Length: 281
Image (cartoon, rainbow, N blue to C red; front, side, top):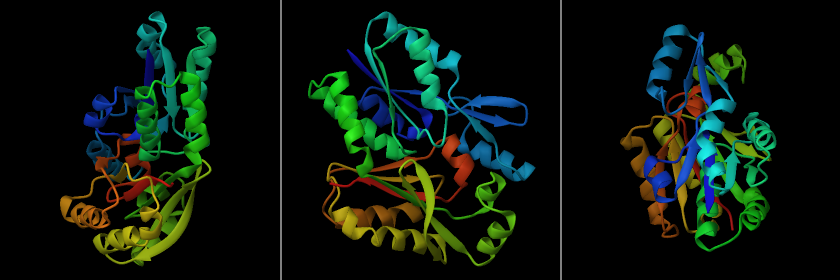
């Protein structure tokens, strides 16, 4: 049997993980001197509350070797093939932890795939892998096809506030102050495993997010029609509904999934962030 695993930054909903038999291993969120398992011991809203009260953001850390081994051991004992799709290696050492585990346990049937992405940019690859498993592909074939296609993932999102990026050291406090004062909303684009700043929007977040989505129209109409993700870090339905309605109006996608980002992604981007993610054809 082939087991499909990911770390908690894949940001898939519990329903999607259950539907596609995807197992997640949590990254760690460190607040002061205590560490929490992402998605198991702390919620994004609790993180926001703590971050605002302490005027800082949590630190995040790779998956725990011990946690990963405990979760994997039953599948290893059963002799299963295990495919792990992890957050970009340029953002985390998680994949290296999994490779070390495979080496220490002398288990060559644990395959580690660098998604070169984050959030549902990983989730898209997991759904593709699940499809390949259903088709009867071997683990080695799936790994090859995943790596061949990962460059076609289109992942971007728009940040509502620069405060969290500044607290985490990803932009200066002066830049954040100026950006927040001018109501600038930067688009963050994931390319080749790293994040870069794209277009800068200005205005109210609801209008900005809809405009950002509409400007993706040409790419969306040439996307893999099986699904598109709207992934957010705590937006209300008043914000999400127009974006989903717009995507519906394109009459292109079989599935439009709305998912909320977990603790690790939310720790870095803050509340109000939203992205539209898909595979290009």
